[in-house]
Amino acid sequence: MLDELEPNLWEHDLYRVVDFGHTFSPVIEMLKLETLLHGEAVAIDMCISTVIAARRNLIDAAAADRIIALTQRMGLPIINSDCTAANLQTALDDVVRHRDGLQRIAVPTAIGDATFLNDVSLQEVVGACEHLLRRSLR
Image (cartoon, rainbow, N blue to C red; front, side, top):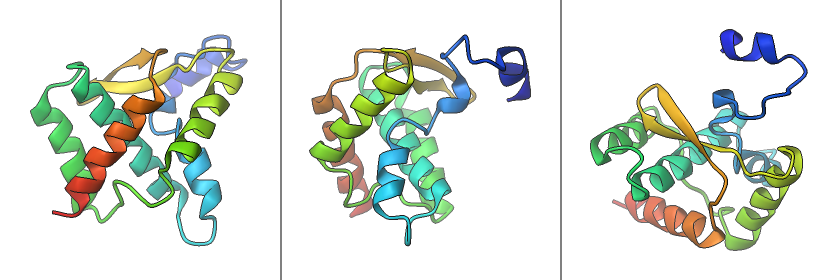
């Protein structure tokens, strides 16, 4: 992490792997400040981003399943009721504002590797959340 952040102290490069889990989580976290911890919101975000990557064939299904299953085994949430279309749209709008006009959404391509997306639609995010909701009910 320091190797990525230290040479980028003034954030000239906004494609940062450390932003994995920090696209949707700020909005989700702020809606439940009293009951949802920062790490729990980040876990939800990481799962959403992982499903998006898997649906785009950027990460193989086994690795995506491993990420989500590990999140569940650690007792962290993979989705919550605040993952609504309106809240997710707010999150997408916020990241574009804070990331100099582009989404720059970090998504995994393998365990320990990532790429960045700038064309994620609300429909794609809602679909990922619906997938996670179904999975959480199993």
